[in-house]
Length: 194
Image 1 (cartoon, rainbow, N blue to C red):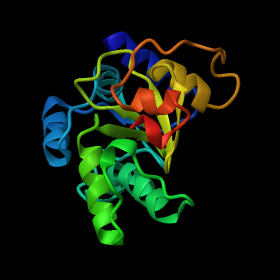
Image 2: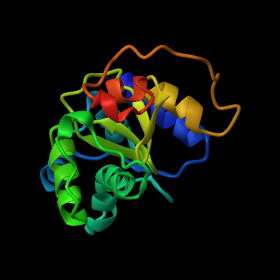
Image 3: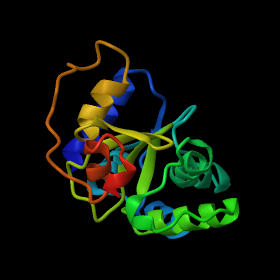
């Protein structure tokens, strides 16, 4: 797995992204305990090599949990926003009747999404699934309920995200499907698919 982290950190460094030393085992344990997830193997491999710093990169060493909690909550908040503001409201077909009270809507959306694989921020609104997702898991772009694959895997994601000339942008098939999320993306974000 280390080769993925080395390749990813090399790509980031070549793109001019500031990098700090990789997380230690104790730091991984602290982050994973504080936020209630484990990094998938590719994301962990990157963060073992180096931690990207700067605007929109999660600062996993920051003692203030609020910025990362906001990024973790962004996914549910986007679904809640679309449930309350879209016309017709975005509401999963399997979620039962939509409550009329906005607070009950928010509670129901959070409850439903808590049963889905957890998404962990990589950069801005780009997310990858937490463990037990395997190596080779895709990266998603999450903007409310407008969710797409942004990379077939971590390396392909960086090719797509980093400035031109840092990699060859090409179509790479999605080899690892993430339960519920992949079905949702592949259904063009249809509420009927969930």
